[in-house]
Amino acid sequence: MVTNTEVKELGHFINGEIVAGTSGHFSDVFNPSLGAVIARVPIATKEEVQSAIATAKAAFPAWRALSIGKRVEIVMKFRQLMTARMDALIDIICIESGKTIEDAKGEITRGLESVDLAINAPHLLKGEYSVNVGGNINAYSAKAPLGVVAAISPFNFPVMVPLAITTMAVAVGNSVILKPSERVPCSALFLSELWKEAGLPDGVWTVINGDKDAVNELLENPAIEAISFVGSTVVADYIYTTGSKYGKRVTALGGGKNNMIVMPDADLEQVANAFLGAAYGAASQRCMAISTIIPVGEETANKLVKVLADKIAKLKVGPYTDSDVDFGPVITKQSKDAIIGFIDRSLEEGATLVCDGRNPDIAKNSNGFYLGPTLLDNVKPGMEIYEQEVFGPARNVVRVDTLEQAIDLINAHELGNGVTIFTNNGAAARKFITEIDVGMVGVNVPIPIPVGYHNFGGWKRSRFGEGHMFGPDQARFFTKTKTISEKWFEENSESASTFAFPSNND
Ligand code: NAD
Image (cartoon, rainbow, N blue to C red; front, top):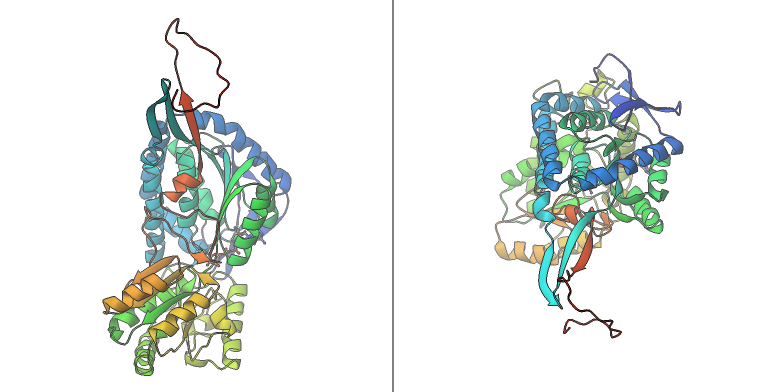
């Protein structure tokens, strides 16, 4: 386990064991709460990735041949180990990502939903059967695993996203190669130890650490059948385009720019409380974080901004070791600087500051990558801060006069991950649900992340490909359908050649 004092040299997890990198090239892993390097992660070469793929490929036939019941038994054991080691896992998430303890717990709990879904794989794998479709022939379809599949994950959910994009793949009989974010590799390596202890055969689960070169090998290597990616939109687009070019099945989830519409009839106290957590939780580093609040009508806007300003002033930013902090640092110094740049430029473009989080008190006495909560009013479409995903605690107020304007505004944006409306008016909610072009929609629910047994994914440039994270789509994505027509001859039965195209009237 990583501690705050040692700088550990990490490895890859290949063929059931941690192996040292051979490239001689490393990337620093930080504890963002301290701004200190805690580990060095090896950056894999093309050859290392190729060798990991070969191991995964060799493990596939035996894993596929194991009964689904036995495979699920291992997944259940993995789940048990995860809950038994929950505290150690929370520690690792907090140290390498800067999340608060409660937030890390929430992430693990949501991750376990994917494990639960994978435990239900036998149900999701059931095929279809038709008896006597012609001439004593029975026809059936079965779902077969793909082979070696790759998963590439972002930094902001070191456990939940890897679990969501790999566990079903394992359960249905694939060998899986995970390339976690080089900023949070410790969580993925910890999961590897749990898989090993749960009895997963060597080679079925691999973690290869690295950067875009490792990803490129996964995209191009003919042995990789499918790619499941979660990360920023620019990279998701690249992964989808390149993976598809090399003939792979690809699902690539990208970024979000999520809005919260506030109707004049909504209870503003409830709205503000819901907004704070959804907008600033995890230092706003969630693809489903609310980035823009859209009050409908000038009166609603004026009242709401006042309520928000009072509440935001009381938020506490700090390290996860302080039990009363609302959120922690952002992931890197570069990220912090980029967010401050977004705020500075938005002011030049005409936004007005309601709360300024650019230099919070804690940042004056710590090297951690801290930013306080910033709220900008009078943000308008076309401004950079409105158009781009800002992965940090700088949030916007965009004022509109009508619900129609709010819907048009949201539909015109290139991203469509999540959205929500706060209202007590059923007709307004119904209109919003029907007309909004966004994949995950909330009504009086600030972060409408579906539970693990529903499909998760945005629309437009928030998701490329047809698959989803979570939900029954996982079982479809990681299998292919085989359709079998089967006939058994009775002893001494007669047969004859037929040259007509076979039909079901025979
Ligand atoms: P990122 O796109 O920078 O990195 C994601 C993964 O891609 C990492 O493993 C990284 O090593 C790899 N990568 C980075 N650049 C690459 C390149 N040029 N070529 C190939 N691979 C590359 O994302 P991040 O900063 O780690 O994570 C934050 C982003 O992820 C945000 O945009 C957030 O909205 C998004 N996200 C989306 C969802 C979702 O469900 N839609 C969930 C979580 C995070």
